[in-house]
Length: 299
Image (tube, rainbow, N blue to C red; front, side):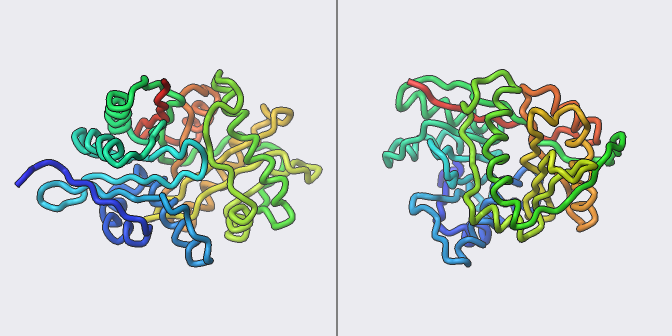
């Protein structure tokens, strides 16, 4: 009997959560993206919205049957990068070989280091090309919340009338984040929620604006519903002309307080190439948990 980890693929997020839920719950901050997307897809299925047929969810088991890793391919944006959580090195390599054997094209891999690095290197070895870093990210969890200097204005929960502005700012978020990190605008692949998904988040009370003293919306902070007791904040977006006023710090602090009041642990991602956001969140009390990367395989 082989001692090598085994890969188990699921097409139903509910089946995946039944198999991997205890593993995700044991380290819910690290698993936040996979858990959040799985629960979101379950909710969408319940509403009759079927996911793409080639979505999959991965459970990695060791020789004893214990779950030692997880991942998914459920990104709605090109090139649909798989997302990997920590797993044994040999499992990450075996995953790349599995894709190669079944002819599944993978041109990017996102997730936790070092698993994504091992996997992407094997993808490049088998199919040709080289691995490049598109983005280094860092996942943080809120420790003791440190209130920022108070600024004028107040937090307002978004309403359905805000859906068009929210869509515009979600779209602008990644392009502006690229620019702030010194990358060409729009180079980072990302998810922009469709109209139905934005309405779902608004109706769930998971999207807020900071309004200035005149009642104008000057900043957006969103959050995901808690999965296994962890709520992830994002995106956090201030239009260029409104930056430097402290809107983001105040909004994130207040939203964090609301999430804490619900009993959730709070986490968020930062782009390691953006010193401004990293500095802001560190001052609020966010502490690094794990480094991740978005890797691409280029010819």
